[in-house]
Image (cartoon, rainbow over all chains, first blue to last red):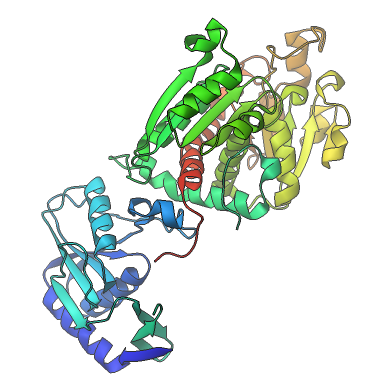
Length: 170
Length: 312
C-alpha cells in the first residue's frame, strides 16, 4: 500500500526553492534517466522564466552500474545526451530520489568519461536516507527518513507530482 | 524474455530477443563515437576470441567491443595456437575453459562447432562468430542495427541478397531472421551457387539480377567464397559472373536512390561489385562495420548479465 508523504503543493514548493538556489547566468543541468530527467525538466521550466541560459543533458547510467551480474543489462536503455562540452563547467547533476548513492557514483563515472567539469553539484528532489557511500546532495528539495525495505518514489500523477512511500519488503 | 546463455545462431532466438539485442546495440553506438570510448560495464570479465578462420572485421570488432566495455580480451588464431601442433578442437576448448573465461567467441569452418563445445564447457558462454556455411548471427544483428538507422523497422521491406548463397552463413542467418521479423528476402544467384530447396526458407528465387532489382529496398552483395567452393565450375569465369551478378553503376541506378547497398565484407572489387560502385556506396558498408562493434558490445553484455529483471 502506498502512502503519500509529500503532496503536490509540497513538491512544487520544493522545486521552486531548488530552482532559486541554482540560478546563475549560465546553468548546466544533467538529469539521470528517467526520474532525474523529469526533475531536471521541471527545474529547467522554472529557470526558463528568468533570463538564464540553460544547457541541458541527460544521462543513462545503465552501462556504469555495478550490479550487471544480478540484474542483467537494463532492457530499456535510453541514450545519454550531453550536447555540450563539460570541460571546466559547473554542472548540476539531478536525480529524483537519493538512496544508496550507487546511481550517483555510476553517474559521476560516466560524466568523467565525457569530460572534466570544474565542479559537479548533486541536486535531488528527495533524500530518503540510507546512504551506502560518502555521497550527499548539495541541494535537497525534501527529506524523509525511510527504512530499509521501504521504497520512496516520485509519482507522476495527472494532478501533479507527489512522493509516495511503499513497503516493498518486510 | 528468456535470458541469453550462448549465442549459436538466429535459429535459436525469438523475435523479442533479436529486437532486444538490436536495441541494446543502438544504445552502445554513442560510446563508440565519444572521445573517451570506454564504459565499465564488463569490468572483470574475460573474453577469448578463438578464430580458426581468417577474419579482420569480426575479430577486431569483438575485440573492440570487449575492450570498450572494460573486459579483458584475448585473441587466439588457429595458426598461432596449439591446434597447429595437433591438438583437437575439444582439447583446445577445454584448455581455454579451464582458465575461467566468461565468454569464448568462436569462428570455425565446421557448422555446429559452438554447440559441440558448449556441451563440454560449463560456465562459459559461447558466441558463434561464423561456423562454416551455417550461421553468423552477429553479422545479421549488425545489419539489422544498420537498417534500423535507415528504416526504423525492417518489417515489410524487401532485401535482395546476391551471390554465393550456397556457401553463405550470412544469407542463411538472414533467411531465418526474415521469417521472424517479417521482411522479405529475394535470393539471386546462378543455380550452381544456390543451396538445394532454398525456397523452403520462404524467399523468392531469381536467376536474373535485373529482374530482382525493382522493388528492392536493399541490395545485399556477397563474396564468392572460393575457399568453400568444391566445384571449380560453378560459373564460367569471373568476368562473366561480374556481368551477370555484379553490382555495377547501371544496376545501382535501376535499384533507385533509396535502395541501400550492404556487404558483409570483405569485398572483391570487379567480382560481385564494380570498383566505382564500391566507392560510391562505401558509406553504407562502413556503417555496417561501425554498428558491428555496438552490436557485439550488446551481445557480450547480454551474455555476461544476470537473469534479468527490473532496475532496483
